[in-house]
Figure 1: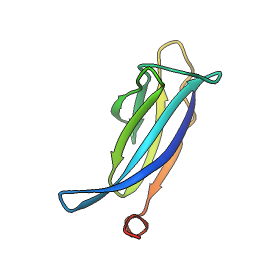
Figure 2: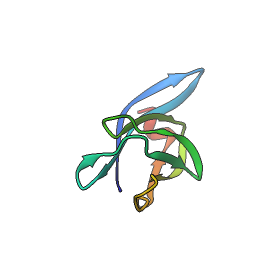
Figure 3: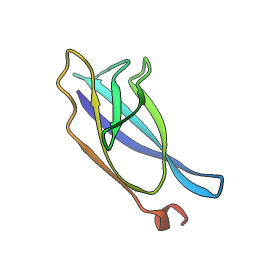
Length: 88
């Protein structure tokens, strides 16, 4: 499995700034549906039919990995969200 992580936009919810992030999971260039996506070991959701999971992250450092039965897990991706940069 291959992981692609892209920043979409910054939103503010209940006074907290969050980064909306797209996480794509593919295998040999094809989207992988229902892959489990983890951030720091916690399951944050599953990819849709386009291999996409959109998630809002608060500032911090997250190690993201995706897994699906029958596939090798993705390499870890480290996402570092700096609060000061979000507010620019």
